[in-house]
Amino acid sequence: MTDQTAVWFTPSNQSNCRTFNEIISRNLEKILSLQKCPVTYPQLRSEDPELAIETRSGLPALVLAALGVVYGDIGTSPLYAFREALHATAGSGSHRENVLGILSLIVWALTIVVTVKYVTFVLRADNRGEGGTLSLMTLARQSFAGKPAWILVLGVAGASLFLGDAIITPAISVLSAVEGIQVVAPGLSGWIVPITVTIIAVLFFVQRFGTGGVASVFGPIMAVWFLILGISGGIHILDDLEIFSAINPLHGILYASSNVGHAIAVLGAVFLAVTGAEALYVDLGHFGRRPIVTAWFFLVFPCLLLNYFGQGAFVLANPDMTKHPFFDMHPEWARVPIVCMAQPRPPSLRAKQSSRGHIPLFVRPCTSMCYRVSKSCTPRRHTPVRSSCRK
Image 1: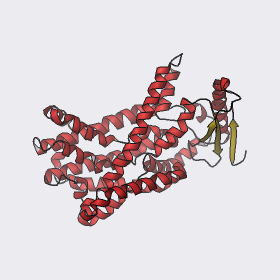
Image 2: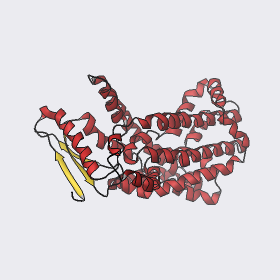
Image 3: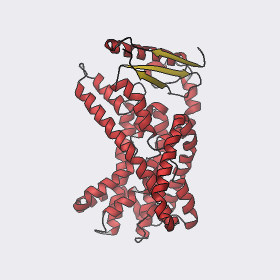
Image 4: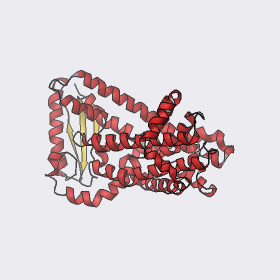
């Protein structure tokens, strides 16, 4: 085989789509095994003698790449999640109890939704190494003999909701980062929206270079960003060590029960802390489960917790500085670099790649495809190129 091989599978007509799909799956596995390209599909692991070596040598690089692609959205949540939850309380109740209750809700949201739900369970439900709503839909349909249509409807509805979230999330993340300009230079407040639109346009433009190109740029940036989150939060935890009592879930339960009128708004703001968690599952096919889980437990989760606890302690020690607690807790000389570091994120990269890679396979099965596989490919990477069915 040459360094880059293209194999085309084209159905002769619309009536043999099922046979066509079986041919795609069977030949794709052969191509991947011949090219020694590691995949997560269990039946191929034993056929790939280079998998163990490449996994050991490539794990740090994959972890760094996962930081840049998978954790971009959830990494910006400290900019706005805690702040919006505080503002949603509208100054009702005890300030200390509000802070401890909100922080408790955020901590347990991260723990239950991301650590327990996604990392422990959902990431194990891969479809031949691929994740995402449509992959999960395919697994669900395969568990029934008749492949009921209602599961397909639920899968398409779930994918639609996901794409909607992928449209909203960049606006929230980038806009919240740019709002730091108000703290540094209040006179530039009128430029926040134009700057946000420009950044989003540039970030979407660079996605044309693919996952590898985006990860190589944003991976180191996100690694430094999470270290900044952890260090800045860890320093301010010393402002009020009682903040650790927020680990007790009773603070969150008591807060929600005693603030029923604001509970919906506050819980909506708390949910912003886990915005982007779905990327762990959607990008499973790009990096595999181990790099994503390693990045979460060893860097992302600890740094997020440290930052949220630091913001909580800072607000307890400075009750009058709740407007922008994330930016205000940094010294003045560090605010400009922090605002600059908060800008570059790859928004909704997973949305474009997820819909591009999965819709032809699972929603429109009768589709011509060309799978291009290179000997020098990165682990778990194959790129489908498709055209409409020929009649």
